[in-house]
Length: 305
Figure 1: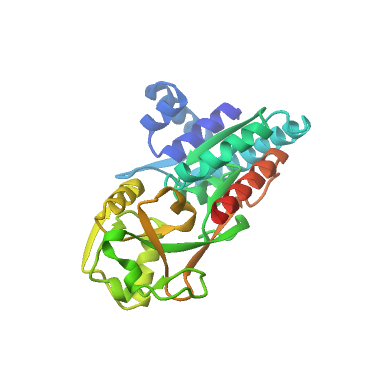
Figure 2 (figure 1 turned 45 degrees about the horizontal axis):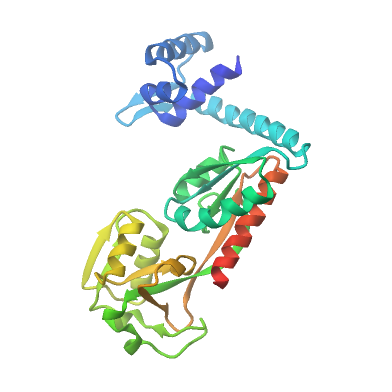
């Protein structure tokens, strides 16, 4: 069995569709379909079955994918060990983070890394937390930017900071008049039950901040009277800046939204842990470790600022 064939099978499983897999592999769909047919005949049983949601691996297919992932990890380890022999003069790091955080973190991280390690290439993958877990488990990225808890406990985590989630709003809402003096969080705080009559801008997608707001309202036994839901994080911020509603923002995002005022949520504040995640097994290259150090440095600088 050639590595090229393994890559075909893995791509079909990842895409769940012959047409999508063929497009990613830059080959004709008919050629890929013929390959799969011949391979399954040679193997003696099918690797995929067809559903309304696309191609799904059979038990034999799942075994193939599992072994292919291990082979890919071995290949990745070999490449990284060879790159390490160059003393960080060359190499590659694949970094995954959410598309919401990317515009706020990457401009601080990439220039620093490029200046210190100009020969190391950085590839960016924008993916949700759930998608990042799968990418890390499959060894398809070297490091991810996550917020525990995770569904898979095998992923290695390195805590970066505890990030506070803040209530944000335009000055027209006069939140300062409803705020209490600085509490344990070190800034004036607001009881969310006192601002339920205001309009809110919240997330309509399955995002950690959406789940955070749901748990917050449930814990305080309250619900906003008016809510606008949006898929785009940037849309929510821009609407908040022109006074269309209150929203919740991580503290590392707030330096760029000067039109908003910010308050702790409750006297103790509401925080979440940010962490770097690494594949559960395999070699972590020097380039990946150097990149992780710069991410931690940039995030902590953002928090101080």
